[in-house]
Image (tube, rainbow, N blue to C red; front, top):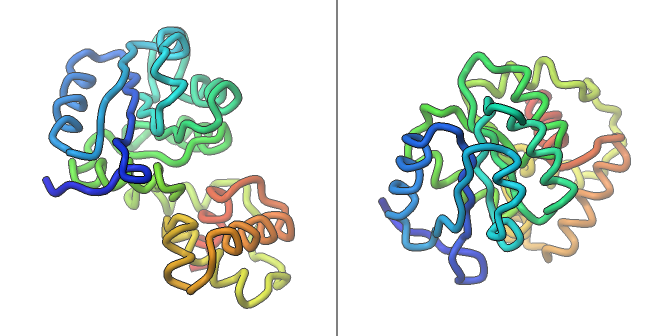
Length: 215
């Protein structure tokens, strides 16, 4: 698999949380093949994950939806408060809608199906690290149809805010949007914040889903 770039040239630090030992081992071996990614911690359940010292410096946490004692959604909600800098991605199966919607509301960067290709998983980790939104294409239409975001949107955004919002919907990070529109990252961040405020949305994940819903 081809390598990518880490955070500022450093390794992307990933924590794996899954109660299936085989799943964790497989993910660990897969990620070890990537020169810019390092697995720095593993846990079999939510409480064990919260106790991991590696969480304090992790960039991404891959979290299973169904675990004993504490679901992936509950863990994501805890991590959003305790470690807001960690980008959380939910690993789920196709028929677990309640976990998908719950994880987004809890603050997840996005979700992936467990049968996603290795290339999709690696790309998702890198995108989440850069601040992108990760939504599995196979279930995004169902999420868009059911998530409680307003539609249609009132035409209150400026032309530039519209451009930025539509790029957010593609999963692009602030850095990528800045390059595409020849803006500074700070300007992009301001446009995203303005769009969220005007539309009454909580975060860029809701913004992405809302604009994806508009087509």
